[in-house]
Length: 235
Image (cartoon, rainbow, N blue to C red):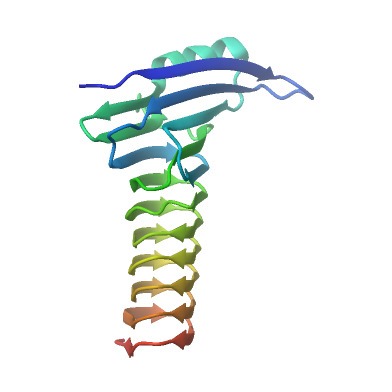
């Protein structure tokens, strides 16, 4: 059973100073009653997700940008290629946002998402590229990130699989596990244990209530302070 989705849309063509960029904003919302998880599957663009205590709905503002196209061409492109949905499936909500592949991906098209959700829901994010910020999501958090910076603030338990890009975690009420290809990792204020497998890039950890385990660190410095459990480093 798919839930009821409310969507509004407005658009503006940015044709200033010789630019042919086109921007369109769409708003979506979904009643969160009975939900336990939000799954987010997105392509290129910035992603911000904020957990709101007591919120009754999932609310999404999507800013679609098409570069180097006039308004008519951009609208045709969006009509043919855009995938932007927020749907319910039993106790799970799913947000999908990308452009359908049609004779190659257009690198001049992106979708920036600003998402607000009830703070107690679990969250799964599958992100292609672009900066990602997640704040105040107290349910279990799982992120599969291709590239781009990733910042998590005041979360529950955290699991991250990351290709490349800077990772910062500031506040986790549970264990943190990271499998990272490359990029700087900064972690602090964790009430559980921290486990890291890292390809390259420096690692800085501070204020961990339990254990710190670094399974593999290909290259880069490792610094840790205020770890109240055991510390294990395996090269």
